[in-house]
Length: 238
Image 1 (cartoon, rainbow, N blue to C red):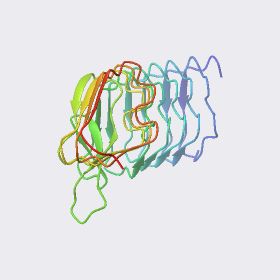
Image 2 (image 1 turned 135 degrees about the horizontal axis):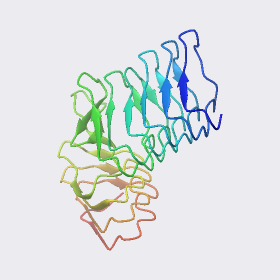
Image 3 (image 1 turned 180 degrees about the horizontal axis):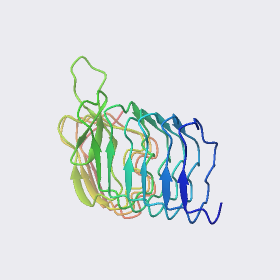
């Protein structure tokens, strides 16, 4: 498949196998059939000349590594996808913005791991679980009131300081994982919990302020933050 430049999958095809076009280095154009429901693991991994992809409305699931290493990929239309697995778009370094559809029910904190140009993740109106505020993905809480109280994914290309919104009480596991352009993080009083590996390997973060209301900081939450110089904890953690 090394010389393959264009692929049109006819509607009679309902499945593509794992790694079907893995490392198809010359592939620039893909048209998928309307019968495919799942983009399997590593289906287009390493297709580093592929610039855009449109997933037809039939596609519901994008599995791990499906588009990993597609370094030229700029635009992705997820259409009616309901689930995006971890590392699905790993190291897609040309993506600057992505739109998550209203149908989305599950997206992993590491779905866009290593997408160093990604500055904005949008969520379509009507999504019942997620919303986007300033390009950051929030998840609906489990309480009686409909509050998006958990920060679940921070785009790796978003630069500078960030203050967690007042309604946000939790940072999910790995929410800021490997966000190397983040330099400072601030939490507002009322914030409660930082998840496991939440800020793992954020190499530019220098300053952290944790308010008195915080009751726990997860395992390896700030591990490998090489530039971290000031860490202020205004609380007695339990």
